Image (tube, rainbow, N blue to C red; front, side, top):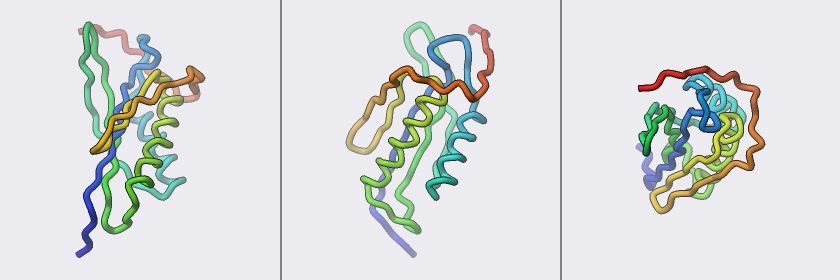
Length: 128
């Protein structure tokens, strides 16, 4: 049995592009994460979620890392990987901001508005 110190990092990202009526879907997120994990030799989880805020809501995902005892990494290595993937998601999903949480801190990453429009958007105008 292998044991390591527990450590978890999460990326919180909405799927509504640029606060408009266009939305990405979880398949778009999977493609970005697949590209990242195959390039980096990594593993992440993707959990659907929903953000509810004043006068609005949007679907989103939580992308997670854990300290995996089979392939131990330092907290700094896990954090660096999370920040790298967050930057990719920020641009490719047309987000203005993404939050990364660790057991100690929350980080708000903001976009310079140079978004990547290569992933097709899904139009969703349904209002609840």
